[in-house]
Length: 310
Image 1: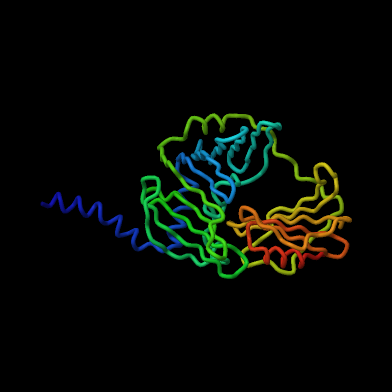
Image 2: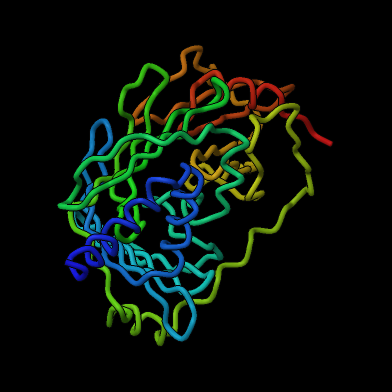
């Protein structure tokens, strides 16, 4: 009888402890798992008009994070991360490397970062549980503090604390994007492909484009939690027109800003949305500012119209 009781307690205590976790604690556990665990996930990325099957593998080799992302449909399109260097391998161009601490386009960077930063823009709310990929997932809702960003939901595996599903929802609760895990495998050692990636000599990191005029664009307003992560000056492919490029993020939503001389073509009065991506064009003096991102269109309009040169 005592053995049965002890077995019951061994099973019940961890479950009871999980019941006491806050939404923030769940997200912090997920962040740690994404950085430290060895795993392979097969997943589907669903958008309004596209479906992409992906494989993402993560582990540590000699104490350094290594990750591999593979797109399974269409032309070869892979990415490898060793430490803070990401190398992109595509069928129609030579491989190239960039400084980055995450592979973009799969799991939001904020999920493996400092969860406290998300609280600037979102309320973290504990939801219910459901079964995903044969596992139990705890839902955490990230409810916007304002009308300038979309809502998000993530389901976290109660066993590994790795993400099982991630939804981006519009202001009227329409699904704009979803990442859905269909298989998750945790391993005790890094996958062979990660060990090979660690040993591989990848192309050197691309040097940042030199700024030709040293202009320092600033914003009169940004939504809480958004910050500048990239400033660049380069020429557009094809037209060779010079543009300033500025990248913003709050960890979940990304916004790209392009600044160029106004052309003869009229600026579109309507703002368009596709796959949750909105676009806004605004004139600032004799310049045209184009803002693109997965945020409500009014956010882009306000950011673009408030750009100034210091």
